[in-house]
Amino acid sequence: MAETMRAWHVTAHGEPERVMALGEVDVPEPAPGEVLLRVRTVAVNFPDVLLARGEYQERPELPFIPGVELCGDVAALGEGVTGLAVGQRVVGSKIGVLAEYATVPAVAVRPAPEPLDDPAAAALTVAYQTAWFGLHRRAAIRPGETLLVHAAAGGVGTAACQLGAAAGATVIGVVGGPAKAEVAKAAGAHEVHLRGDDWAGAVKRAHRSVDVVFDPVGGAAFEGSVRCLAFEGRVIVVGFAGGVVPTVRADHALVKNYSVLGLHWGLYQLRRPDLVDEAHAELTRLAAEGVVRPVIDDVVPFEDAPAAVQRLAGGTTTGRLVVRVAT
Image (cartoon, rainbow, N blue to C red):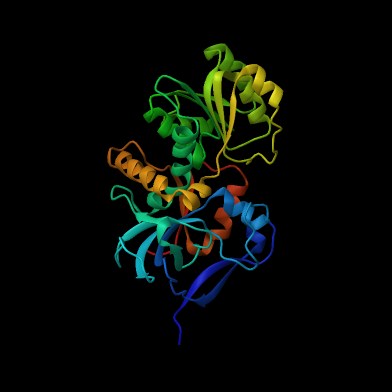
């Protein structure tokens, strides 16, 4: 008789609390090239919200297990897997990890940084890899440049603030409220503006322009950002958490001589895992130095996972929400 496990499933498309159900299924077997992980913690990401709503760029067939990043222990190795050991604490990323066990391609599994506890380790991969590739691979940020980070108190925003400050940039955060401003400052933002104010005008008055914009929001955030861009400025388009996909005006980009750079980090995991390995090694080094430390807003029990995803959907969280699956 096969061993069973508990797993959350999205059973229909809609708001997470309405469409997620807890069920019992067989523990999966790792296929060749895969690793079976005993899940410790799962970090909640905005893609979980979009997956539940059926609005993500990938649309798994219903019902499916959500969750896109985790910290866990290697429970079994599929055929041909090398470089990992049973019992090793690791981090990884793949849709389908909000369960007591998950199979993940070995190329998407890496050693968990020792200085990070399980909630922080679970929150490392997607946000920090996204921020790292956006700032360094796509925008090639340089010391002394000015970086504008939208949603600077969120998971990927705090990661961009920390990594931008570590890169020697002057970091300007934009957040939704006064309480979030303190979170962004603690993450490395040198100054913070509220989204409801004339933040674009304030930035232009104080700095004239910014060199790099990190934008996971879209809509008005993007439109205000291009008004602030310096000569040869770069906008990194990370997502559209604000719900509006902005229009990119080629004539405006030409006249102001700026670049709009798309970033879908998952494509690097698929096409250039060697670059992901390099970024993970650098993030591990920065974690050991205390520069990188995921900001954890709350750690919730496994049974409360749908409420955690719904909280993220509401846009009121700071830092990361993490689901504790096992100790």
